[in-house]
Amino acid sequence: MKPAALKNILVAIDFSEATPEVIATAIMLSDTHSSKFWVVYANDSAPFLLSAENGDSPGPVDLDTQDTEVDNGLEKIKAQLSMANVPAEFVLLEGPAAENILEKAREIEADLIVIGSQRHGRFYRMLFGDTGDELTRNAPCPVLVVPHKSEQTV
Image (cartoon, rainbow, N blue to C red):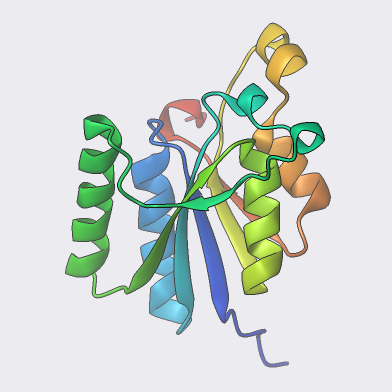
């Protein structure tokens, strides 16, 4: 049986400690598949500012974030992908991360979503939810969760 082709892979990043491992996994996937990569950063630092009730709609914004730390992180990722000869589209989304990532996955007809694992306590999840859980429950395609090395057991 011939393996399914992955034409569009959405790589969701959050600039956490797991992000380099997520990008490295995406690079490994490029060795196997001739996919188009979409590197998506969903900035949900203030998701409560956007509300469908107010007529607001989260969506793509200019990739110039005006945030030096984020811009430096994006440059490192671009360099890492360039050195591996992996072309990618970069997208910055403002608002609730899970909603935006799911919407982008549907829009590009993603065949796979690659995300990093996050370890948050119960209180955090109760207040803010868990993006990874929401993605794995509602994604229109498989979701590959890349564990952070410090979370792996030896």
